[in-house]
Image 1 (spheres, rainbow, N blue to C red):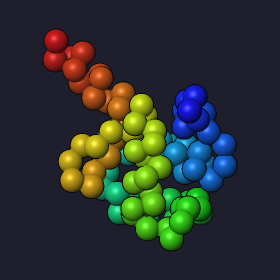
Image 2: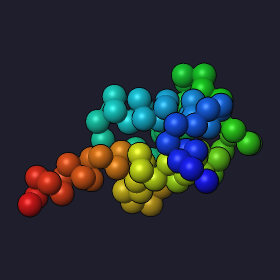
Image 3: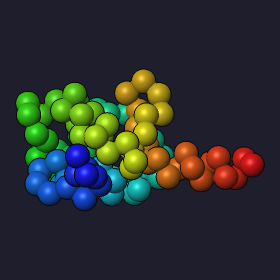
Image 4: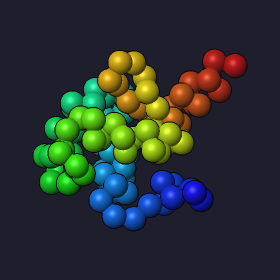
Length: 88
């Protein structure tokens, strides 16, 4: 599949865009339940049953944008890259 999750369309892309905005505004990793709550607060539809697991699926499909930082905690992949370059 050609980079269908890099520039996707539809509900999944709206969710990914919103999560990126949420994390950028926060400036630090967030637990998935906080991310889902922020999506609900913004009125962003969460596909499927609207659970944390549904959000996780969409974040994992965009691994080039989002990365796991700990159990249930996600951040932007670029933050990891910036930290690595500062440490070298």
